[in-house]
Structures are given as structure tokens and as C-alpha cells.
Length: 196
Picture: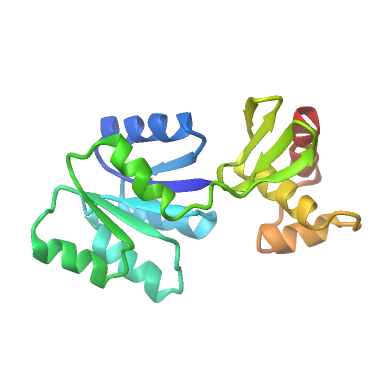
């Protein structure tokens, strides 16, 4: 599961990233509206965690623009703006949840799980289970975490078992037609094979 975190407090951002990656999520960090906007268009995310007040603008405005462009990615605001008006504005622009700072990490994890089907699993073989939501493979109760693109490729293969799947099909269905080199593709496949 890939998360985009918009937070200009570097220490908080790194703490969130460390805590979330420890439980199996993959995180990208942005400290400005501009960088968050660029990341949201260049990659696919399963959830946004947005601060509201950042130096170059407002998380409210960013989410309003994303929603206007058709982006329906679930979004949780993490902010010190705790007045009822602010909470209402957050939901008005399209937020799915609103967490007031300071917050407990355990509470945030509970809220994140509302938007994730972590219980979805695919048995690849005996003692080998794949969890698409967290890009995790469990092999004899030992956890291995794939990169997001590797997990997407593996998930696509598993949904098309006993079928021949071409590289072009993967590019079109997983990466929206964005080109990447044969070498990069081979590295993804090699890494998947090493684990499973």
C-alpha cells in the first residue's frame, strides 16, 4: 500500500514514514503543495495524508484541485486546525477523515485501516501468502515487503494465472502506458523471483 504524506515538519514527516513503513506501508514524502501535486500525478497512491498549513499553500486547496481533476484517492487531513469550521471545510473539499494534532500513532493506524482491505490475501503456495494491500509476502511466517511496482506486477500475474501476459499489457494496465526500460522491467521480475 502506497501512501503520500504532505507534511512540512520534517521530523514529524520522517517519524510518520518510519512508523508506517514498519507496519508494511510504503510512503512518499512531500513538504510542499507543489511537490505533493507532482507526486500525485506521477505515481499512484492508495491513500493521502495531508497537512493543511504548508509554506506554499493549503492542503485544502490541493485536495480541492485533485478532486476537481477526478482523483478519488482516500484522504486524511492531519492538522492542528481544530475548529469546527476547519473540520467542516476539510470534508467539504473531499476529505474522508480528519485527525487533529497532536494524535496517537495507534489512532492514526486504526483510521488508515478503514480505507484498506488488509485481510485480502492470495495463497501462492503452501506457506507462501501475498497481501496486495501492504505489498507483503509471508513465507513460512517471515515477512518480505516488495516495492510498490513489484507488488503491482505480482498481483497482476496472480489475477491472470494460466494466461500469457505481455510486457505491453503490464505497462498499459499497471503503469497507465508510461514507458520504462527493458532493464528496469527485468529487475522487477528478478526481484519478485528472488523472493518467491
